[in-house]
Length: 297
Image (tube, rainbow, N blue to C red; front, side):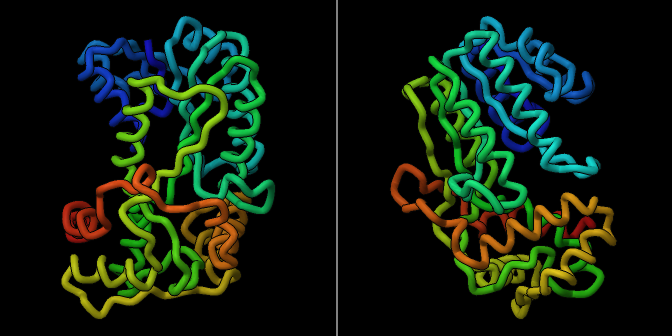
């Protein structure tokens, strides 16, 4: 039996459906039953509860072949890092108590940084805490910047005609990836269970890009070939985040993350190779997902 946390999210949903299609018994975890019906209709078991509840997680992890573990985003908490810590501590306690042998986590590029990596700090903590569990085989998928993050820029693009939203300099190279490719990498390893000890695997899209290059690709898809990336200074970007409803703690963590992109430290330890290069291009995403979302907004 496989346990998939964050089953209604971008990666968890695809993982759960693929495991079910492969004939595997799957328990899907979510906060509400209605978000899990698409899986239970296909034979999955639903577990409704909080990822901050170690007792709940221990119950559903017990007897599992493997777990897909993540720390979901939380846009309403007043203390973002404290929230991340609570979720990681619950995962850790449950994995220790349940005796699960294999776990695949959704981590991030930049998790190698011990501090000052913003929203990724929870992924660093997740990796370190799970790696400290004796007998647990871990595989941390250090994913790049999600293509889907560009959806959050559509509102400003519609209103002001500019592509912006993250205070990242336009000429800084970064790893971009589609969440489908992350899910596919997770499924391959969950089905094979071909890892032992403590492991990291990057999931890195087809090539590195800058935000300047990304703007050209997205602009062409929406019929605006002159579209350029707009960089806002950190203080202006933070003010904009607060204006659209971000809590100060979350805004500060995003700013810190963007600082690590701009100083180049986020890419530390990453070397592109055949294993971590994945197929879905930003051009595919721009044409098939971003442009329709832009037109419908």
